[in-house]
Image (tube, rainbow over all chains, first blue to last red; front, side, top):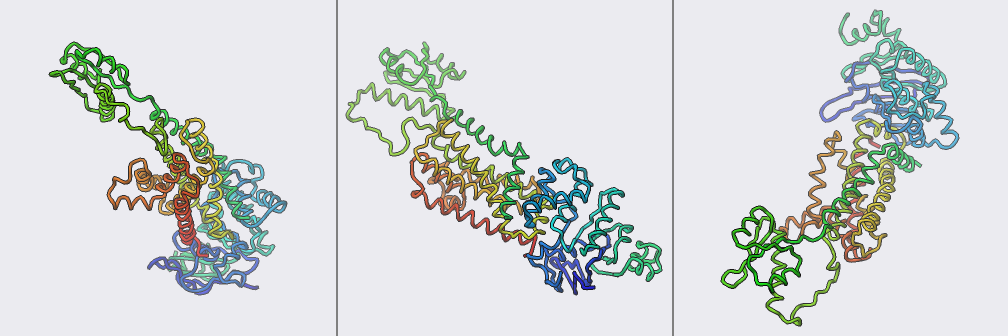
Length: 240
Length: 342
């Protein structure tokens, strides 16, 4: 399986504070890779490096064989940040149309894609409503829909299911799985342990270091843990 | 076209946000109307008391622009003045007229003295041939102070409201995370800045036309130059305000901090924009005015509206304003690097 994302010996420093220490990892095609770690561990910084918005202090990030950051690669990556990042004074349709245009979609294709992603996140009925009238969960879903507009080959989701109810969370994961089977590479950050179980492989991050990678089953077996949470603690040097 | 997408989005935001729209379009008109009402009022008629003045003097006094009140003693006149019923009184002391002024308002003092001066000229019977003929190169005897600082006000409102609204909307883009999301798309940094300039540009054009039309045609502000020149200057001034607002918004973390730029950036410019005479200021202060966009904008406005100059005569002002905008655009593109490295 060819690696679609290759991270090699990446360090990221802000001033004299090192946020990421020597991170190396690969994510293949048709894989859901989960980045698991407490808040402040450096997950978002790593995702931004893969998204091509930031430059590593040392080391390389390669996506689809192209070294990042590269402007022309941004159109092939879908990025959903932790904040919803929506224009509250606009309707959902206007938000979608704006971002679709930025990704170069136009005409019939643009309209079609807008309908598609909205039905994917179950918001078709709320298409013409102002986003300021949306609930927290609806905003999160709209944010996800925008990240999917341009059918990215690489999808980076920073805490995608925060504030979304269990039923909808399940349906979103079903969609992610379906996209993954169609050949999309997905990187998800989370600090929710039961969500981590749904990923193909996991990377555990603590204090800017990747302390373990592997399938959820492997990680549990290696540490003789019954849950991912116990495994995480074990790798962090704490025995439950 | 990504620039068009950004422009289109800004217009839609404006159309959804009726209150901000009203602030940009109606507020300047409202304030200009108030200023016009305050400064275009009739000239003040001094209230003057007379104490035992000979009839001929009283008669010629009555022909001047004053209201007369007769008193039978200086004590009574003084009493009336203390109660602020009159501004001055005239009495004869040893055969010479003596004027007593209330004195607390310099404007009224001047008005009274001016009236008395013309009166004394008439009485002493200076020959008509010695009286100078007064001509005006610019302006006219009927020009009011509103005509003189109106052009500055037009420039100021264009500058102030565009600065505030554009700065805050870009700040919001940063604080809500939409800027980051924008930068996660293949849009180029200069395309964002250009989109903003374009989006607000069309909008400020509408604002400029409205303010200029209202000032000239409704409020009757003096306007001897061409409307088109006036619009060009307003637009350039707005561009400077827009790019400066966006630039300064990157140094603010909240709307409140953006407001704090008003006393720092906007208010000082008012003092150097020609509302007050710059030539009487200290040399180093005069140099300060050279770095203020509003100084150039107001100078250009006044040259067009009062002196009737065309664009060729104020080219330096236009070039400087363009230079300011270009510099701020460049700074904006550079500061955006902070959020995305490519």
